[in-house]
Length: 328
Ligand code: ATP
Image (cartoon, rainbow, N blue to C red; front, side, top):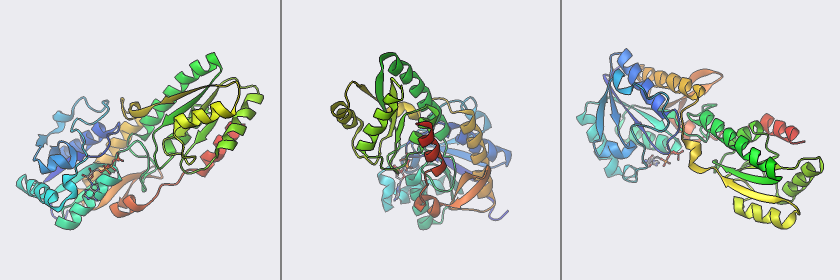
């Protein structure tokens, strides 16, 4: 193996997502398996600057595979965006004799990792941890599956009350730039309409569609709205519009918010996190750097960090069609 790596550090950065703990556990245990020391860095890049390092062995990550969030904590660090901040961080890595870094986070965290590598030639591998599923180079980011299950569970519960009172519910889910959560959870929750940033349904069509579904005998409706939907109105403005343009509907709004990020990771996310951790460490040991590990065609694959950051994920057109047919 080229340049034998003896010590690897791992951190979580940006927004947290379910499965991050499972990924840290996997990184730590893969290091132990290969007789490589592992260091955890608290508070993402800020902890790298502030020297918040802790030695981790296989036993220090027991009992966390089923826990949401990240025990290493996550942070957004303004200081790491500055050259001085990154220099401090680099000095700390050298002080602790660390040879390579695993960054678990979103595209912003990967950008930070790439800049750091370009400045100091420090080996970096990324693991995509974000519920939005908005990272190129993987069909699933860590936490996406768990978030979907959380949202579907919430939709099911809201539907119970919607149908008991003949109500129309607008349910806002996360997804400022992408509608993966809204589209998938909307189909699974039997939503009558799904509004996503990639598609412009238009307010008139929305009202037409709701009228149609009422005429077809439906007495309650669920509309799932991604935060960044193209109509551009926030969910309360949508309610107001429907109140003014449709008679006889009792319209309610529910914003699911941060609950979507929490909770125990699903089986899928635990397995994915375990696979990603192994691939990340073993790639570093093979001398690879500046890649993100991802799931493509059911296999663990590497995508250059630059591509993962710049590439855009596309909405699945087949799902859009399925959703159209299901709302007939
Ligand atoms: P999420 O998808 O939840 O937003 P993210 O990883 O994209 O996660 P960001 O806040 O965009 O979250 O980035 C996390 C951290 O990465 C930032 O707080 C900053 O420390 C670092 N970072 C982001 N962009 C850069 C950059 N251009 N240069 C240096 N560091 C950066």
